[in-house]
Each structure stands twice: as structure tokens, then as C-alpha cells.
Image (tube, rainbow, N blue to C red):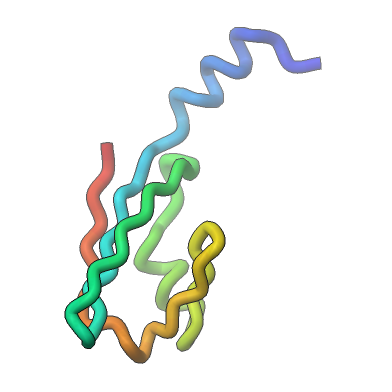
Length: 72
């Protein structure tokens, strides 16, 4: 059983990542992820090869001009 204190401590170890994909056609895709503080967005994108799934979207990385990541 997980106590309320465990949930609070677990939430403190989470970070919100704001990920923005700037596409080759000028479109901008914004996403917000809540992941563990040790999560490396760039490493996950690099490991994804050409296709990256984020929430319910699948992004063709060959069509991405740049990626910007901010954390809260």
C-alpha cells in the first residue's frame, strides 16, 4: 500500500518538460510531459531513430528542423 507521504515524495522527484518541435514546414508542435527528474528527452529522441511517439502523436523526426526543451 502506498502512503500519502510516499506519493508526495514521488511527485517531488518528477519534472515537467515542455517540448517544442519546429517542423520543416513551419508548423510548431508543443507538448508537456511529466517524467522522472532523471528523464533525458534528447536521449530518448536520439534512440527513437526516425519516429518518436509523444502522448498520442507520432512524429517523423526527418521532418523536424529543431527541438526546444524547457523544464519547470
